[in-house]
Image 1 (cartoon, rainbow, N blue to C red):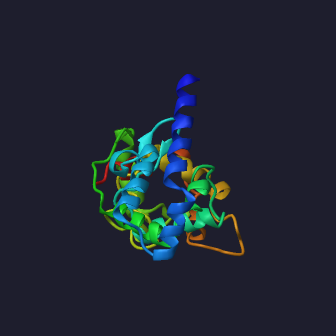
Image 2: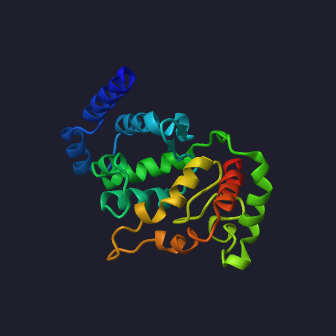
Image 3: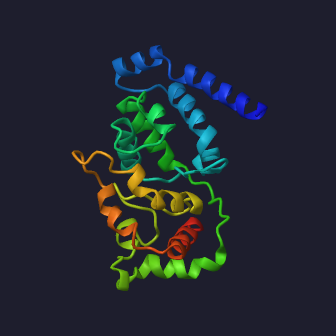
Length: 216
């Protein structure tokens, strides 16, 4: 309990420093961000998303942002701001980011290229590779590669899956309808994935997650 309290206090102190009203006002006025402000935000993101945004396993798996498509990151941050996607931490973090900071963060995360964390069951990789490349015709599940690319590095609004933590992928797909597309009046790209989240068995989902988690 003491450790948790210390971490909470530290995060609160960092938030107060990094997301001060003065910094936001300066950012809004200039329409750009300084290198100092950007590095401060990147350092804060590292507390959850790991060194070089490679992802982190703590009380819950935190996603890899390294190498992620900038358009996808910008879209997801906007979804958090507009409450179309829910997360108790990111809803609070995202809404204080200016458009200029969102764009700067997205570009920098895309430039990072740390090795995958790994840790997924390797015996599931062959099955996952087959599903990723060929889909599951009997369940009307298309190949994952058709949207996420043959190398799983994504394209534009379609996210990179290569190197993503397998347990994070499993959790997000399993809870898809509870976390994404929460404002029917503002449909987004999450609607394209929704039909397939129910068609994968737990083993098939784990297999795909394991396969992409080892890709570089």
